[in-house]
Each structure stands twice: as structure tokens, then as C-alpha cells.
Length: 575
Ligand code: DGT
Ligand code: CA
Ligand code: CA
Ligand code: ZN
Image 1: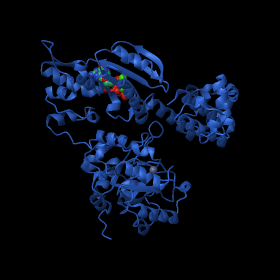
Image 2: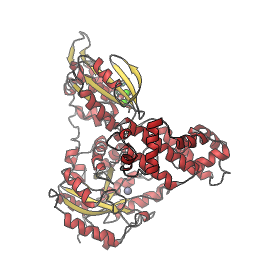
Image 3: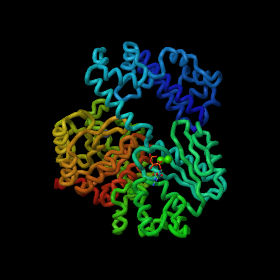
């Protein structure tokens, strides 16, 4: 992405936040936010555009276009400067706390002069907030909880953000002359749900050209360390990239070492030592003679330790070494095994793209089948009606098989109410090919009530998949509390699949929950929950998470042939 576009995106986003804080003019704030996103995602450099050219970008009107040209002409925008001068930067930071909106941030600043997250935490502990209008003990609790979630997430970034950057960098370094191999390693290669920093490895005889290429990239904002073996930079978005260059002969050992995890490496190193060997990032050596034994490929390194090659997504020391020794590593599900997506939306509810576009994009991915599952009526803001969903069904039947012979399933995403009931009566549900059911409200029931709610949903003969089962949002919302062992057992018994939702800020179920559920014999659906054609590609993050949960093809219902899937979706119903 062009750097000027990013600058303007950040500036307009800041202005949107400031407007919301100072005047609470939500509509104007949203307009700036929308324009910020549009400019950030604009394919060409906006600094070359005049007001007229800028206005061709969707969401950019005259006044925004003029601010953008003012920025490129003078390096500043007077309206933004003016607003900034009235609001300390720390107040803007307050609205990044989950559950704390602009109005509350302004109250905190005006009434208590709070202008940083630390000051806010202090004020809550001193019980200063509860007398403010619109605040109370519950608000205090929520804010403290939000701060804790932010601190937990720390500086870790979402998988897709790291992946996009890593792939750009790997492509760039691969083009540098002398490059024999280049790949990302670390937690990203293991598809961990969040990423601390991005580790990139190059195999080449000379390291200098690669270190120079990295520090010279347009996305490099700061060079943290610059050396012959390792160089670290920080990108304009604040991500840290560690680059190491190893000799081509050490590629396998380097990749094995820097892929981690640390816990997995400790195990492999111990196995090496027991065999009179020494394993490091430079190779596998004979401990006595120092002779290099096997280092060119990961397969070679593992083979010399009497292990099969272990997929990176398993390398967490969660039993993969033992399974490897016994020859019992699972044949992990891959992206190619997925025959169709079973949770997707269209613009009939909150999706961005019309049905035909979603279907065309899905068919282009080579799917054998595809389910359209828009929201059901009880999510009131989506305004779904019986008539609308039945009309959609007609269109789906017409499109069925028309794009690359892909079969279409008509489904819906039901809302599980606090009692475990869903939107429509049984005879109406009978008309769908597939029903997902998700929790979209009442996140704070007691464990007992929540468990009962989920169990009842699973016992519904028409509910096939529980969507994003824990409802957690990474860094923003903790998952709901339930007796998951009981829920997993009921899923297995009733033939209700659990979703592995591939949205990078959900990844729900997470790897550890998947591992637990699998022990009960639960089946899974890896879905994107796509709201646009682009996010159909997020499937890979769901597959990565499923692999971290040791899932095989047989565990995942949307790898099955359509006939077997349809049988599963009947849930034993005979009518
Ligand atoms: P992250 O960055 O926090 O998401 O997690 P990783 O796993 O990418 O960790 P990172 O970037 O600190 O290091 C990359 C890999 O390098 C790590 O997975 C294993 C290896 N490594 C780093 N430090 C050590 C160490 O002290 N001992 C061993 N055995 N391996 C290490
Ligand atoms: Ca890392
Ligand atoms: Ca690192
Ligand atoms: Zn949902």
C-alpha cells in the first residue's frame, strides 16, 4: 500500500475520533471513518490526485478531498490541528478501551481531567467514577475488564495482519539477488492465534544485500538492530520484523529452530543430545567431532532424530513428539480438503456483496458446495422476514449448479435466546438445508444457565452447527462461561457440529477447545462467516487453527462429499 494513503488514513481516522469525542456528531465521525478506510484501501497513491480525482473515491466528498489536498500541500490540516489543540492525545487513547465510547471519554476528561489509561485505572481504584453521570459500579467493572483485555493482548497482532505483511516481505526478499530460499517462521508459521513479532528466514551466501533490502523497504519506519546475522525493524504499522540470513547448507536447521515453539525446540534438542548430537540454528552436528550431519532440510533434521517431519501447526509440545515417535501423527486437514463454506452472509443482512457475487467468488475458489446463511429475525437490526428469506431461497434454487456446477445450500444463522430457543418454529426450519445457531446477546448468564442454553440449542433437531461457540473477540471480549465438557458431550451425542470460525479476531473455537471437543468425538465445520467476497479467503486461518487442534479430514464435515454432509445435516430426522 502506498505510504501517503496510510498517512491520510491515520489522519482522517484521528479526526473522526476527535469529532466523536468533542461534539459527539456520530454521523460526521462515521463519514470520516469511512473515507479513511476507503483511502487506506485505495489501490493507487492518493498524493497524485486533485480534489476531483479524490472525489471519485467512494465516501470522499468535497470537504474531505480538500483536507487531503491541504495535507499534501502544507503537511498539515488546520481543522485537525485545531481540534487536536483542544483534546490531549491521551483522551483519544481512552476510546480504544473496549466498552468505553467517545462520550464517556469526554466526561472523564472534562469532569476528572483524566487523559491516559493509567490515570483512568487509578481513578477507578480510588472509586472516583461512580458518582459521575452515566457511570456506575458496573461501568467501572467493564472498563477495568477492558483494560485487562488490552494488556493481555499486549502488543500482539492478529494473524491476518501479520500474514499480509510477512507475505509482502517474503516476496520482496525473494526477488533480491542471491536468495536461495526465503520463508516466514516463528509463531506465524505455526499459525498461532496472535503474533508477537514476525520472523523471516533467508538462505543465501551473503547476508548484507538482504539486511539492506529490509531496512530500505517503504514499510520500514525504524531500524531496531542491524547486523550481519540478524536485523530487526519496526514497520509503519508498529510490527516488529526479525530477519535472519543463514548459509544455504543450514536452511533446514535454521527453519526448524526459528519456527519454534521454544517448548518444541527444547524437546528436539534434548533428543539430539541423547544421540550424541548437537542441534542449533546452524545445523545438526556430531557433539564430539563437530561435524555437520544434517541441516539442509527440515525433513533431514527430523529424520536424523528418528522423527517424521512434524507439521509446524503441531509444534507446541502438546504430544506431537510422542505421536511422532509412535508413528501416530494425525493426517491434518488442509485448505485443499475443504469442499465448501457453510457460514456466509450476503447484503440481504449485514454482508457487503449481493448473493450472485458471493456465489461467483465461492465457485472461483473451486468449492463443490456453498451455504448461504444470512441472519434470522431475532437479530432485530438485520430486519429479516419470512418473505425475504423465502425469496432468497428461490434465487438460490435458480443459481444452484450454475457456477462451475457448485451446489448451493440454503441456510440461516439463528440466534440462540437465553432459554436456548431459536428464531423460527420447527416446520419453518424444516425448509432450510442447514441451520447454524449462535449466541449474539445475553453474554453474561451464569455458567449453569449458559450451559443449559447451549445444550438446548444442540438438542434442537434442526440446529446443525453452533456458530462461533464461545463468542470471544480477541483482545476485545472474553468468551462466554459454560461447562464446555457438558456441551461437547451433547454435541457428540446429538450430531451437532461446532464451528471453527475463521475470522481472524474470532478463531472460535480456539485450538485448545478444539482439542478438548475432539476427545468427545465432536465434528467440526471450518467456516469463514464471510461478509464480503474478499474474506472468503480467511478460510486459511480457520484451517490453521483446526490443525493446531489436531483435526483430520474426517473430523470436519465440510471436507465430506455432499451426500455424506446431507446425511449428517438430517440429525437422524426421518421426515
Ligand atoms: P511470538 O513472536 O511471541 O509470537 O512467538 P515466536 O514463537 O515467534 O517466538 P520468537 O519470535 O521469540 O522466536 C522465534 C522462534 O525462535 C521461537 O519460536 C523458537 C526460537 N527461539 C527463540 N528464542 C529461543 C530460545 O531461547 N531457545 C530456543 N530453543 N528457541 C528459541
Ligand atoms: Ca515471532
Ligand atoms: Ca522474533
Ligand atoms: Zn454470528
